[in-house]
Image (cartoon, rainbow, N blue to C red; front, side):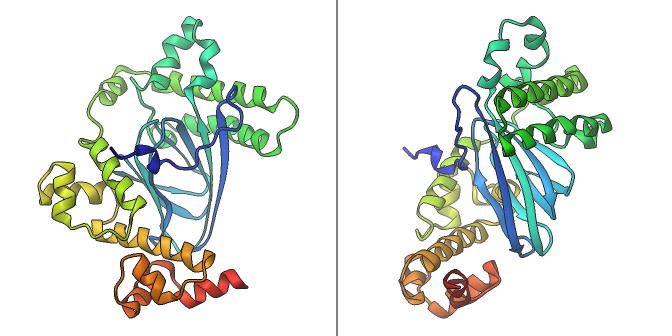
Length: 298
């Protein structure tokens, strides 16, 4: 059986007693539609704060555009992937939070009424909270203050971060507790999600493997038409485009971390024709394989 952890982002948690983590993502000189966050999932909540540029994140098959100053929430267990919308730099911070951070509030009946349902997943916040209720934009100062604490780590920063994040969750819950949100959250969010997780794990673990659309559809358990439609909704890319993206990222890693020739790398990522490989690499990475290797050496 495939290990679904192969799809996890590097969601390390430095302090198990205070399970949160800041990831400062700085993507430089990206092409329009270039991947800035590969498809993955994790059990943690994730807050994404866009700092520079524009991007689109597909979260359980639904696309959400975000620009500098905006915030999105990714619920635990959701498959998500991100692409640049413009050429240039894309900077964003990710705050990953495990619900265990608030375990000592479990005996608090107000916490259990307002915050716990969101932590347990029986209710979901909107992915773009401020788009549904403008008051949420005023809550984001708590998130930014928590980010500053995590970045600078002054004494007892863990307690400050915990208090600010709990206040943020509480204010959000106060805003979005209506029953219609609960009804929406109880609906199936994306059918066959677990099988898609297994398929993507296979692609990312072995991108050079030859995989036809028919074989992939059979693996997920749907017909080819529905597979193509669902895969495009989930990842924002066709199967061929996604596989090629994984192959070119692996090629980039090999170009910058090995002494293999371009021809050898092309073969290793499943491209039998070196000229086609060079064309494909430039299409996905914006530079030739030789230029990519030269950047590393420079």
